[in-house]
Image (cartoon, rainbow, N blue to C red; front, side, top):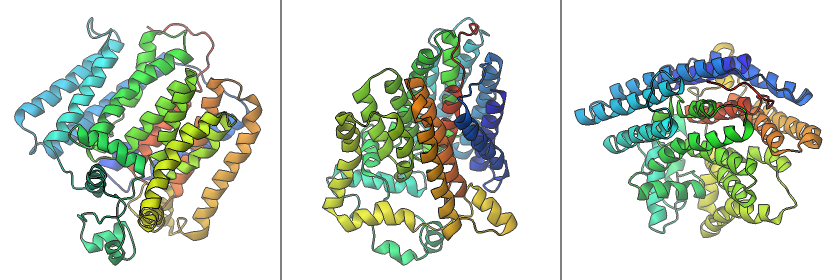
Length: 457
């Protein structure tokens, strides 16, 4: 477990620094990427487990809390001119409550020890809400176009058949999106899948499209606590809460939710799927899986590991999961086929390589002038990842006899696939690395041995 925590810590540290301070410091990503490859192939050779350590768990939580404190301070400095003094004070009070809840886990204080996980989730949600409503309309295309897509959706207009407000000048459009900025005049710009737009509409009805991401993010620890109690019944409830606290302390979460990135919602539905799956709630797990697979175009790479752990003979899988994935796509494709293809497929394919991306491809280009991202090399790397995943899936199929082993296997394969996807894709950014870090942590969690352990106090 020491190695897992070490590499996880490096992952969080590197992406935190990359996302908020220095977009070109990508060398540290090589270390956790190599760790992912190492543990993936080690797991495929033998069903290895790692030893639980309450001391390392506590140290990790304290370190992440320190980074979270840094994250809050950075956001207050960036947006203090938007926030009234009373709001600044309330944000600080909420974070103090969060710190008290953390202290309660370590028995440093006699209060906030029983419901500290719920109180911490509420305090983080209040902070998100204050930033969302007192700093409206962040100047980023993700927010502007998703907001306008939701407005079209709620007005019963096709989000894929309308032109969206472009907030960047033509020269920046050419750098960020297409080689030919004139192309944008003739195609829709919104690339979010239909389920993402519908989910964001719920947030819009709550006052802002970003609210749904904030709410779902703060619900994750409550599900994680149940997952941990199911998998580690011999550990204390306090230890379960410490495990569940880890995703809540992700350093850049306030930054991502503020900018309306949807990866926080994807993480929630992955956790929700695991929650229903290990609790044997079959239909609910199918529904959660369907939403999870519908929130991003690249979710297609997850099909392999999920298909190998699901009961493909159950017709409900196709009716529920397949219905959630296919029906919204088919509806909009029939409504305006050309606009739908332009937005959902061509938009992704025609995006150019971004040199401010966080990937090994950028590292090789910057220091060795190797264009690994282009053409044949990049395709071969991603294709090889899929082939290896299929091979390993067949290799492990015979031992996937419990929900615990099935989830563990699925996480290892998803971690392997998604890390390859990000390391060598044309565009990889902080929001995607949040999801990769979450998978990394879940993989570590499901690799802990399940034999009786001393209670953590």
